[in-house]
Length: 303
Ligand SMILES: [Zn+2]
Image (tube, rainbow, N blue to C red; front, side):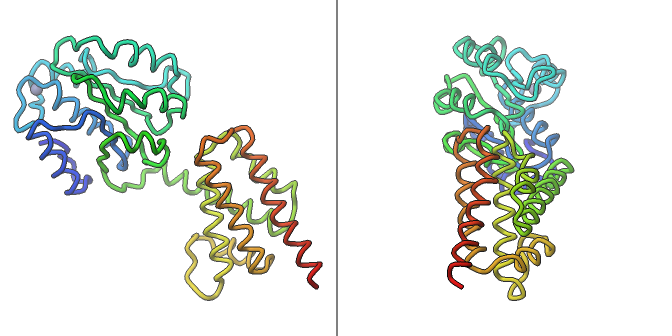
C-alpha cells in the first residue's frame, strides 16, 4: 500500500491511495510535514507508483526490475534534484540542465518520468519562478514531487499550482533547533528594545542578514511577545517566554507596544515578499528603533 507509515494522517493516506487506485495521481505534488526521511520515503513511494511494471491497486510491487532500480537509486526516469556537492542550494544552472532542458525528452523505460525536488522549500524565489509554468502544466509524461518541511517557505504562486499532501506534524530535531534559535533571537531583540539600545538591536538582529525566512519567523515570534506584554497578567502567554513579556511590559506603554507590533507586522510582510535580503536586517533594526523613538518623543511631549 502507498504511504504505509504509521505517522501519516489517515486522511492523507486515504486521499493518496484513492487517487493512485484510479490512476489519477496529480502531476505536481507537494509533500509537507513529517521528518525529512518520511518525506523521502513517500516520494519514492509515489515514484514507484509511476514506474512500477506490476502495480497493485496503484501501489508499487517493490519487486519488479523497475522497483529494484528505483530502490537502488538508478532508475533513469526518476531524477533527483538536490543541491550539488558543497552547495547549500540548488543552482539555476542545475535546474536548467536537469529539468528544463530535458523536459520534453520522453522517458527511457517507464511510461512517465518523475522529478524529485528534495529541497523544494529552500529553492530561491528566482528558481521557483522559473519553474512556475512547468509545474502548472507539465508535459503529460512528467510528474513533479516537491518536498518541503513547511509549505510557507514556498511562493504562494507555487503552492497554488500543486496538490499538497501533509505527512503529519512530526517535530523533527532540526525543526526544534530552529524553533529554539528563533526564540533566542527574538528574546535578544526584545531585550535590546527594552534597553533602548540601537547598538544591541543591530547585534541581536545580525543573524537575520540575508535570511528572509528567519526574519519572518523572528518577527512573528516578537509579535507574540508584544501581544503577551500588552495583555500581561490578563491572559495566558502565547509566545512561550514569560521573560520577554515581563521585560517588554515593564519597558513600554500600551500604545508603544501596539506601535512596535504594527512595525513588526509590516516587517514580517516585507520578509514574506521578495524584498532585497541584503537590506532586510538593516531595515528590521532601524524601523524598530524608529518606531520606539517616535513613541518616546510623543510620550515626553504629552507629559
Ligand atoms: Zn514494481
